[in-house]
Length: 539
Image (cartoon, rainbow, N blue to C red):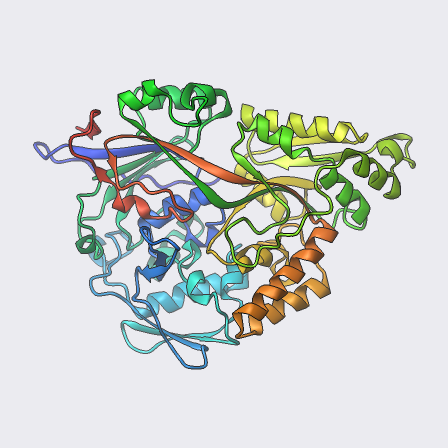
């Protein structure tokens, strides 16, 4: 059983009431940066821990900025990066330190954290971020030099990922296997309470070195609530028990969005704001390429793609999606824009499944319908309805889709261990480069790495490696497009859709900007003066 440590800080009598920002968040599995494979974990972890760099919250197109460290000095051969820890960076107070006091972050902490990430014994799903690193060494107390095995054009972006959150050795050694249940970081907030599967509360760290760069007064507290039921979540938003919803449930769509695609007048008049953007996200059904039925049968995988009815899927999702023709989303350089040969075509799907050896979906070995299981990491009503819809798609070509619903933790473990046939998942871009999506298919990244399908194709790997080795951006984009042609033909995924994201917030939430990289960005939020509604103050 996982043990969760709970910290409770009691307010001093007579102190000013804390202003709290609240929002729903899916269950967080771990606060260890090594385990930040899910966006929910990264969202919480990035409040307490600092990666070396971060994505600039305000810049479009996206660019990197300093976080724990300044932007690096880069050698002319692009093999050496020198990062300098910013003045004032310090770990939060914790009993793992002498006297329970925090201490400055040093280059030794960065070296320890990155080597810990790269250590195969720790089996981090983010281990791939260190694959190109030859050596990490401290030059002095504040400077760290990272030497690469070969130039890697995306390397600075990797140092902005939550996986690179810097941790103190003392905490890892003291808490051992329970380290994921605590947070001993140097970030803008510190974990105050964690009621597992219920809520998390973070308190602002007043001495955080970055506050001097933020001109608005941030929230005193940030609270994440686990709310499984979409109707309950909606009612809590309407009653201002939460300040924001990162998404609109299908059942509530018509109550929120009018025929013109804008917010309905009733909500707008109450002070609710609608935010929308096309995200760098791809939804898919991953295929376990080690499965004895699906793995060796390309025609069957192609049939599954051809049978997926995107238009019906999009209508079910309130027209919030864009069709996926491969793993790279719109707006990312290197995306292959040619038509996808296995987009929805029911007649073609029927021909392909016959060529695959299952005419009419019948398994000739048993004389019965072919049964394919699909695993999902949630069991809420929306997910169940989505899978029921896909069951109807595959039923038209004779395949019986059998759902298996799991908790998120159990789901990730099953996927990493290859104990699924197909699995319902999404990938949100870690940085705006085609490489971030195509690395999901390289043999070297097979689970527990990011290649959860354990897809392996030497021709694809060779193109990927050439793209990473070249110094010519145009040549690199050409390699990316050729690599996508191979993936489209092999169909290691059923390519579902890309997402148009919507968020709702009460008017008092200031400085919210839609972004593909929200991790740690709540430090920029503030209470907007003069808003119709009032934020909550914790007594």
